Image (cartoon, rainbow, N blue to C red):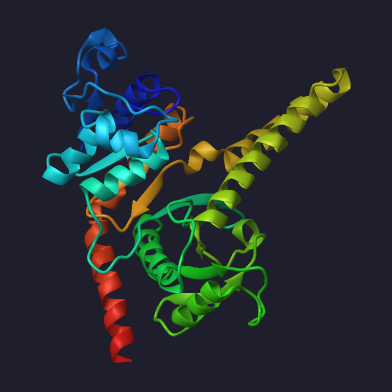
Length: 330
């Protein structure tokens, strides 16, 4: 029950998701008394359960401390339930560093997968573009980037119903001579694979390339790009609100433009794309943004359910294994 808002968002989001999806069941992990305060009448609906956990990992808590001293945290208990098979997946809005450390300790990595990766969608002119890694790995080898492309392709195939998603490798230019050794090495691996690889892409392609579905990069660059885009969206919203509130004429113009502004707001709303999947693990884990509201958290639950229903961990294991086999026999 982490995140900036805790049970005040998670519980209403779970209730909303269950109202919209009659075939699923959810388990809320945390302090029962706190959870029941946000249930209508304090009563559990039929497809919602509570599993107790007495501790909470702070948003600024060291990952090592959470791993050693918070064995009964809602985060740890939820992941233990995934490992034991009592639940099929986990959604957390908690401390990202603690979550990454705990999932690697509890769930372990899939065979042949060297590193986990975080992937999410960003708004783009073709509706959305997926990008990974977003912060799990600051330093990456060419092999890591190649595996990210394989894992991302498997996920996007399922979530967007694309049989051959188009993959681009983020670089400082599209010319062959540009890029560091890791990026150049990954380029060669991807070019010789059977992925739908379109080559190098640049930063503006994240939003403006309508022939692209997935962008692969290391976690340092990916996280900076993600936070930059979130900040830009907030700045645009701020200046629009400020501009249309300056005087009576501006307010009248705002009323005329309101339908367009609402459409724009929905298109660039980070909550619409909330839910970053942690790939490469022996189980389904989705990271919600810490500041997510009810609708955004509900979206993250939906992404986790789709990943479970498609058995994404098994797909990734088969996909990575097949690509390694193809490379060794080529």
